[in-house]
Amino acid sequence: MTSDTGSSGKNSESIRTLLLTLHEDMGNHFVSTLCPDAAEKPGEAVIEGQRFELHVLADDPRSLSPWSDEVGEADALVLQIRFMDALSLDRLRTICNHLPRSNAVPFGIFLMREEGENDFKISCATCAQKLWVRDTDEGKKGRCPNCKRAFKLRSQAEQAKHELDLSDDVSLATVIRGDASSCASAIQCVARKSSEKKGR
Image 1 (cartoon, helix red, strand yellow):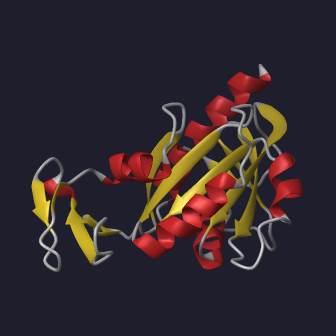
Image 2 (image 1 turned 90 degrees about the vertical axis):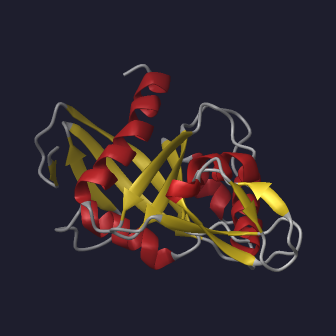
């Protein structure tokens, strides 16, 4: 993996990638990890010969209408997910509902993790109690300590697909905060679909 902001590369045409996030600092940190020399946003990076132009669009709970123009200009869309508790999911669903219904623009989900993190936050579907699910508990039976409801524990990726009703063509990748390799691998996965759709 190579990541730089130089002019060399196999493909000089940039893939304009829009990072949709609930937390602007999380989006900006992703960009600075891939584009450490970028003095200002958007960041530009060349990864394995492909040029990327990265833009961050943070959730504004007051209105999402200004998003339409920026979303319409994107070659690829990425939704960053940190937590999947009830409040976060409501906001994530609102974002998804404002995205184009067609599959013309590749859409990916980045599950954001801290280094060494092996669990993720959800809410009980019955009482909204916040719960932490360990990766090693995938497939097991869980029980809410508050309302005692039993439920099957899903992986974080399966939970995201289920809660956001994602289609099978949506790319999901786990990204470790500050790790350039995982950031690059994730963005390349979405970019491949963009290239395929544009016939590059």
